Image 1 (cartoon, helix red, strand yellow):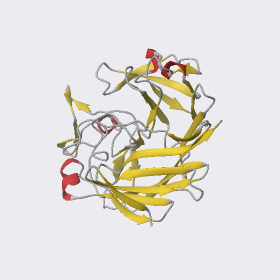
Image 2 (cartoon, rainbow, N blue to C red):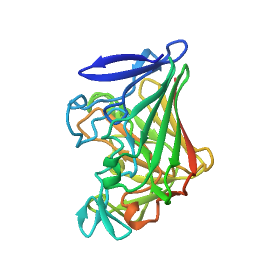
Image 3 (cartoon, rainbow, N blue to C red):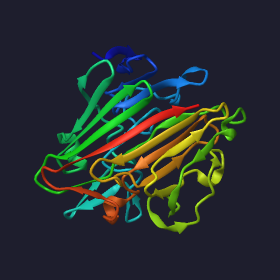
Length: 308
């Protein structure tokens, strides 16, 4: 069985690869968030995730607390009529917070062994108040000696078409600003750059792509939203020679995650590379939404690995 322990009042599930080279922990009650991801780096075991100082706070989750959250049923913000949060469906206004309720609701650990855990989220009376659809999401996390993997299943459990766009939001740990963060390079191959409005709630155009590789401290890439093509791999190149690699794609549709959102806080030791299925406000613009017909499901695959 997966190792379970209580940390600051929360149950934490930990999976470990066969030889112990990869270790990941999750907090089902806190949106199924990953609290730790340790993999073998050039100097030994290395923590790859950053936590804000409010990560373990009790009570309602307003801000994403770092770690490894999963976003559902939307990525980013919604805006309608100049108001943040609402979207229109069949003549009724509903409201969702930024990144949806996925990072804010308890998930259930439905299957566990020493190297795998499946976190599941499905519709409840509370979700139907803000999102009137029946859904099932399963995130099967697996720790391998040379990789960390998430196999996803998205299922329409209702009788009406299901609009959604999920995404990952890992906070990768970096050295502190002024102590090496500026030396970390981002390297990937986007094919388009999308431009936000001032509220970061909608896409209003396209712009020029920055040249890669680029320092993660470069202000031009903070809050950058890009589109990737056939090459889905993103890389963080650390000054000690370690490179963190990540890919996210679909099983049936390779372009399940066509968007990469970048985010950091200049004064904090982290950098986020976020594979998204859709862009902010897609529930209102409809373009950018994925649709599952009744009974239909689709699968995704995310992989993280290190080289050095």
